[in-house]
Length: 170
Image (cartoon, rainbow, N blue to C red; front, side, top):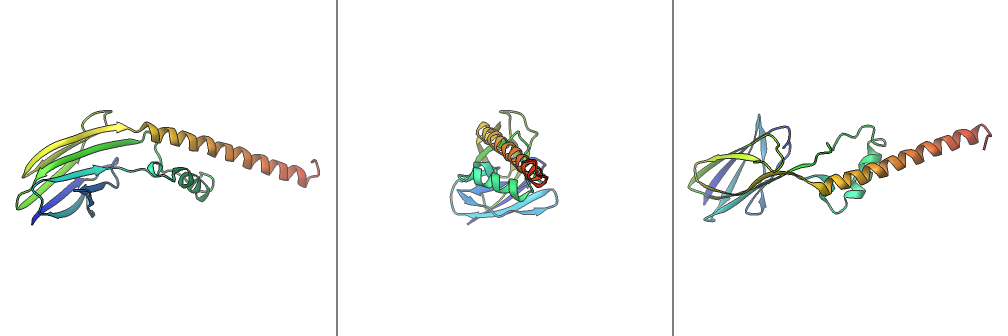
């Protein structure tokens, strides 16, 4: 049984990374400027993947977006999305030894540029290591922004009608 120790540098872009080893999620704990986790594997090669997920990627993206809009008092206290929807595709194949340590540091965002630099004491093969902007998420966010604007106009129209009705104008 080989133990693989993972250390992932925490940065402002990757606040909550989703890490898998051979398609199994890895539990990470925050330790200062690092996320640390450990994986045990009998396999000769292990695939390690790091991803960033947004709520807009789910099947119920529209309901989640509108729900957050209402919960945040019509978007007044909503600060979840940036608008750039920067994603990363980082997958490496490693050949673990008895006590393997991997250290992953993420680089600054550059469209279609390298996402991370990895250092370890075993054989490492990069399968994918790239940043990209997700255009589908950007389009979904624009749709939500349009719907939220329409809800605001409907809310203002309802308040104006109630005030006018109260004073007997309508």
